[in-house]
Amino acid sequence: MILVTGGAGFIGSNLVAALTRRGSGRIVVCDRLCDAKRPNLRAAPQAEVIAPEDLQDFLAGADLSRAGRLAAIFHMGAISSTTESDMDALFEANVALSRMLWRVAAERSIPLIYASSAATYGDGGLGFDDDGSIDGIARLRPLNPYGWSKQVFDLWVAWALAGRNAAPPQWAGLRFFNVYGPNEYHKKGQQSVVPQVARQAMAGQPARLFRSHRTDVPDGGQKRDFIWVGDCVDVMLWLYDNPGVSGLFNVGTGKARSFADLAAAVFAALGEPPRIDYVDTPAAIRARYQYFTEARMQRLRTAGYDRPFTTLEDGVREYVARHLATNDPYLAP
Image (cartoon, rainbow, N blue to C red; front, side, top):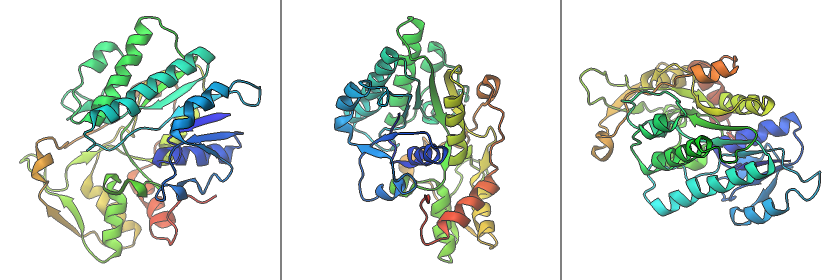
């Protein structure tokens, strides 16, 4: 049995679909099925769903029989909005729950793979090195409360390991960079730029991107490490298949691309020349706006992950052709 918290969310539902295709046995999703999320589980009709408030009772009975024993926990559940300001809610959902799952995994010898975030890197001025040491994590300066909450748990893990406290037999914290792909639609304003540009292009409008407010960066030249959600899933499945690998790992492509490149890829996928209008970055976020992110991927590569990452053009083409330009953009069974 495999537990996936946040399994009806964006990355979580793509993982659940992949586990279903692999025939991974009993899959239990812990999430809230709001109307916007419900279609995300269409590709995994046999997955069981439990509410977050029932998670502790579920865990208490999850080892009562051989069939009910947990083989792995994928902890994708979190408050993931970068604009969330309720610190108590963030701590409860992103830190306290993660600590509880770590302790359960340690006590019962269950592998634990959890979602951290590239938001821990802040403005990128300190680099994008997935150094899992106490000093390496503590030196980072996230720009928002969400990034802070992810850093707090990463640091708690580092302290637990340094103190030789009980740990799961395998653990991996994954710092996802700018993920895009199907089943992100419930995120609304927190969706990736791909569906936003695609909607504009399909409506016959130019893409609207933020203007650069730096003299050394052209409009549209702001760069991110955009990663196809299928690559994120492949990394998680590889970790599941390689229980001897543990650590804190970046999950990006290792190659930053510009927003102008992304918009051009969307228009190309629709068979149209790119058209872009630039608008001022809102004043409220301008001072904290990131102009560059790029994952340092050496640690994951050194650990043995050798698969190539999907190019931006190939990923956007797949996303647009098979999902965004269709009448049903969700993952199919």
